[in-house]
Length: 315
Image (tube, rainbow, N blue to C red; front, side, top):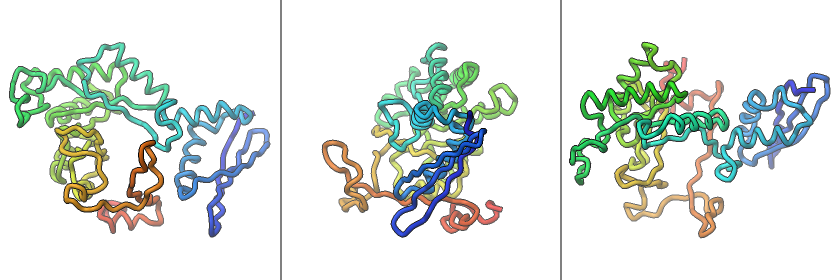
């Protein structure tokens, strides 16, 4: 006997929104149960919709432990790390670079992708910081991670070809010339069509125009550095269509740290609306939690009002 479908029914009440799940099987046997996540009903219903296709449909309805295990580890990462934390780890970036990894190491990462559904994103190299130029060791940083000369750019291309041949489908790039070159190779079929190009935060855009430049060079997604103010990503998002990831590494050369607002450097008191949820074992860390908004066909005007898209773009 196998499960053929799952339907979810939300019963709204003044004090809670219980969700009832109905499971159908190929032999007509039906099961029902109740589940809820306080304040996150839409997220719960959305997850169950995806879980039906990814895990539930076709499963043995009596193999409950196996189904729970697949849903738990398949969607929420590795045991002992972020499992059941509510954070879905879908990509891991490796900044040392393809050129510093053996074929066996890269293949192991690709194997983990298939097993845990976590995409490895490998940086192409070599880079300027590994060159003989002493400029990168000065306080100004010189040219940084640029691909210095034809040979270095060729090395980035060789890295990309080698990594994709081993099964890697996401490449991290740290020079404007690299996404431009790899994009053209992808259109010619030298690189697999499904290969994505992600711009490193170390050369990531810090204004709307630079974000647009990276998109035109072929970037599929862009990491922005954590040193930006709260207003900066908003301006970038209004002109860019490529996904923007906020890089949360707290290194000095990225110009900033993980922070709630710009209030602390100004000597102001940060605004918070939650003083209970985040207990790290030493203290309860104040936070400002945003209310998620689900977008569907009934409220797309919100995207226009908040300047994410124009009305013409949503037609």
